[in-house]
Length: 202
Ligand SMILES: [Zn+2]
Image (spheres, rainbow, N blue to C red):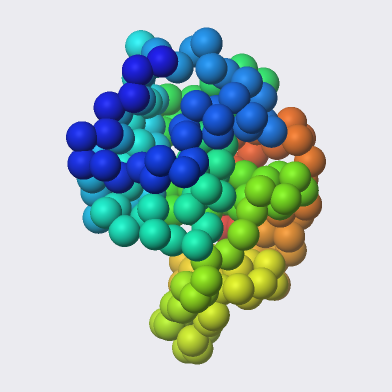
């Protein structure tokens, strides 16, 4: 597996090969041909092409974050899920989400997927909040949220769902359910179904 990291965004202390080899969602090493690490202020995020080329977008400062190696487990969690046929990742749905007018739906699905990843990582002690914690002023709930516990993490996302017009308590219930979902229990289309389910209850 070839890794290109021209901007030295990766820390040498945490080899990517180890993250991939030891990932609790499964070993998909043989399906990853190449990894290109790309500088982006709009990271961390990750993508993979049909040819097995992974693009890992990281900011310059990410390797200094206290939870850097957990971030890498999270990003490669997306790749493992996409390469797991049982998860049913669907490029057609993803392309639909990128179309105009679908931005809330895209954010909603991405948030649920992130919670599903972090919940599973937390079950294997591979999840940690950054220190100092992220702080968000939430315009919908009108408060400052320190994201340093599972409750505050779920609250911040449910406030975002609230700003989409969704019921706060229903959002919290769903987010807790997703956080507690075990390995292999959810599929990609489940997140989209939940979006329409909550939208019907508006
Ligand atoms: Zn993510």
